[in-house]
Image (cartoon, rainbow, N blue to C red; front, top):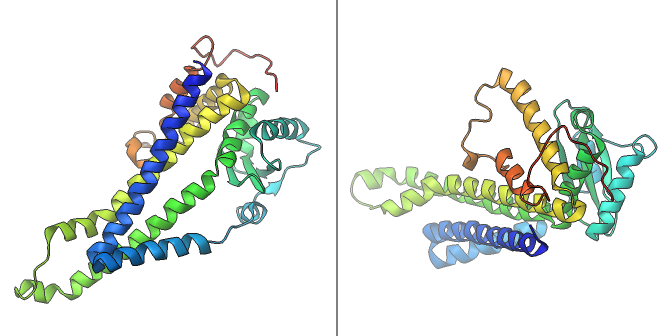
Length: 294
C-alpha cells in the first residue's frame, strides 16, 4: 500500500479516537443532566476538566520502579539502545525513551510518558522470544504510542470513566433511598433514567476498550511508517500469540475466546492482516529472516 493509504488509515483512526472521546464525554454529561438537570451537566463537565488538570503526571522512572522494572544496561543492550535511538529520532521525540527490564516470563512491552520524558518496559520473556528485527518492530510500535501521547489520551478516558462510575453509583443510591416513595406511588421514576444509571458504567467500559483498540491499530500503522518493515511487528505478534496459546490456556482454557469488544487490544489476526497489507509481497513467513536498515 502507498503512503497515501497509510495516511488514510491514520486519519480514520484519529477520527475514531475523537468520536470515542466525545461519546464518553457526552455520556458523562448525560449522567449529570439525569441527576441535576442542565446545572448538573455543566457541573460534571467542570469537575471532569478539573480532574484532568489536577491528575498528577507520574515520571516514567518512578512508575517503572513501582512495577519492579530496572533500567537496562546500555552496555549489555547496546543494540536495542541504538535501534531505539534511531527510531526516536525518526519519530521526532525530544529525548530517546529509557529502556527498562522486567523479570516477567510473559512476553510483553509497554510505553509510558511523552516525547519529553518517556520509558519503554520490556519483559525477560519478550527479550528471550524475539530476534533483533522483531524487537525493532515492537520498539517502533511503543515509540508511536509515545509520539501520539496515547498515555494522555487514555488518561482522559479513564478520568471520564471514573466520574461516570461515581455518578452512576450516586444515582443508584438515591433511587434506593427513595424506593419507599416509589413503591407507595408518591414518586415516579422515568425508565430512561433507570436505564442510564444501570448501563452507563458498562457503556463507559466498552468505549474505553474501543479507544484502546483504536490506539493499538494507530501504533501499528506508526510502526510501519517508522520502520518500513511491517513484517517485523507481524512476526513479533505471531510469537506473542503463540506463547499465549501454549502457556496461558493451560491454566485459563477460555483465554483467546472472549468477545473482542471486551478486550483492550484488537485481535492479533486482524492486526497482522492490516500490517501485512503494507508488505511488498503481501505475505508473511515466520521462518524468513532479512537484514533491516535503520
